[in-house]
Image: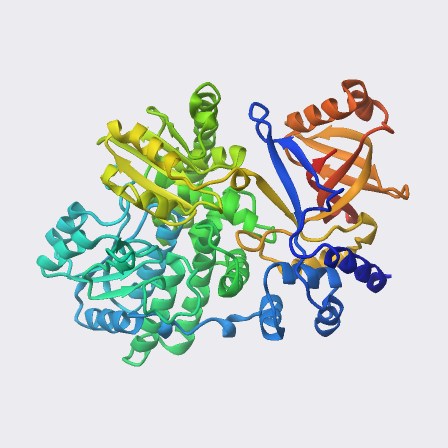
Length: 635
């Protein structure tokens, strides 16, 4: 049955070519997300071709799984094997990172000579985790090392002259950056003037200038070694690693060299690297890196290491979030654990998060973890308020006509600008900058969409800023307040965005009847984990689904549970965790309020919709049952 059906839906897809709409007569859009603007979303079937049955037979997987793997652009037996079953042996050689070997040699020399080394990180998840990785390895080998995490508001991002002056006053010989430094040309030049050795480890884009012939010239900082996979001439085959993984790779080389000089025994070195894999994986998810290539492997192993970590700080963070007995996924790190680390960097100091990881005292770790969770709860409330203020401004002004949204919230906590920008982007599917008043002028953060390279577009009017940086999908900026309107005007005049670019597209992996779903298929879907940026949880679609009965669950009455039926009359359980208010408005608009009420009162026969879903297994009192989770809907 499986093979026959899989051939059927493969034919269905191949008749429609590559990435076609969900059929000309099957095109589904609906008004969604923001009632005032009535944005439309388009459903698209990913229709990349391959011998799905052949792949399925070779790797002993369902053809649906083979189809999803092809949708992720994983092609060829070697790549598929690595995607499904990659191990630590498949990770790339750290020596391929340009200057990594040189940096490791310098650190070995400084360790032997007992020179003071100062790690300077960043105040987010990646910065905290990379700082911890560097400090843990250097300390294990006897280095004289200290760590400084810049204060978000007092210091700002990355290196500044004040931090360098303080290092000089403390007798620091060597500055080792992590998750920052690639854009700190003048600051590193200042450190060199003071006679310091500087090693940069980073993963951000290298600043550049455009020559008269429109070619780009990289502007690398004058450090003794620069380890950043994105610099030109770096042969490292995968450029998508985060700052913590860059630091982890450097420490692999450092520990290896130190082992040859009477450092850690091989067994202790391997144990340390295995423990630190938890932090490399944590940062990869927390910094929203693409979960492709070696990042998939790092996160897969890293998640298991977090579960069994002996680190008191990690254990405490799991405890206060009630995750000690759960099998962790990328969701837990990205949406529960990670935000606790980011919250302390936003509202207090990220040095608290680092102290939590570095303490040997369980009681202290639990205290800090509780404080971090409380800060994150406060941050959530502040974010809701700021998002509501931003939406009110957009809806009640001419901003709603802009293709690039620039929202000025003078009283918003500057650390929340990026989160609010992300929420606004989700609602309007436009590039968004949220700016707020700071100690000196205006500061803010931007979040982008696929069609808009935020850093490149910002670079076209860099004379408006006092400081800026970022990449394609996110950026940070500082400017005088009087430049806010010129900034908004320039970005919109030169956005290059078409109307099509601003239409949200939901990619469907397979148009698959719910009747095809089995517990075994759901279990095989776990082979595709970890899910996240670059490897989204697969979704499926079915037309003409009748919503028969429903009820509202949860202590906040924010979850819908429904009994639905396909065209043959077979029934299924379906959950919906989305916006119930919007869902009910949709039902009322298309089927009437009376029919919507009837759905919950006893049952309806008139509500027939098209559904994007993913299948899951619900376990209740030891009994397993299939359920579908609705991701989107249309009439």
